[in-house]
Length: 205
Figure 1 (tube, rainbow, N blue to C red):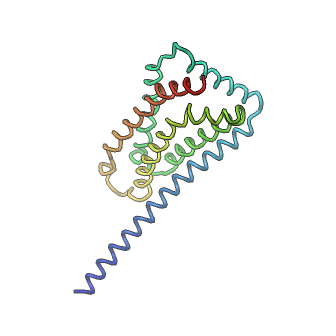
Figure 2: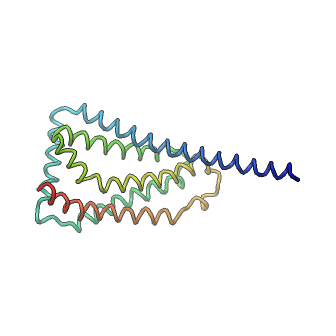
Figure 3: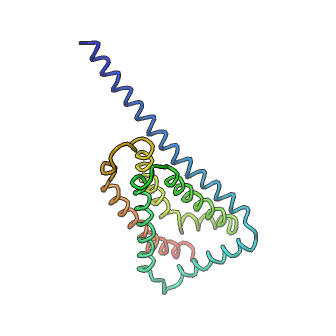
């Protein structure tokens, strides 16, 4: 009796450690994709020629002028952001339902990291210390929330694709996570449309 009980306890412990190792692997994959993307984005920014870089700076100056403008329509910016981030969340959430490959989820994470690395490098390279301030205020708040959102949904997607792919599709549908993603997309859009312009006008303009 004691023998079987010990085997049962040992089996549960092994399953627990196996689960912990699996979760660590998923976290490492996600972090690697985000950091790797950021490095690639920074390298790409450093290789831009002068003409393309000037065009990007001109676009950024236009964004600044739009934020400073008293005619900024925050409601329109909020709706556009909600559609963009909401669809991105839904797309990432649905990955394990439409594909058995981890590549699409990894590609989304790489793209997110690359966009952050690219934008930060351009701003710092052009504006120096002021560029760091621009990055921290103009796009860091909403992207911090967005990165957290992508991290959670990507973890769910990769866990299913890599370890739970044999389950019936119906068991992989996580409605609470989808609703959580939509709520965070709402918060990101609200931050981008209302909070960021207010902070930027107070601190910079």
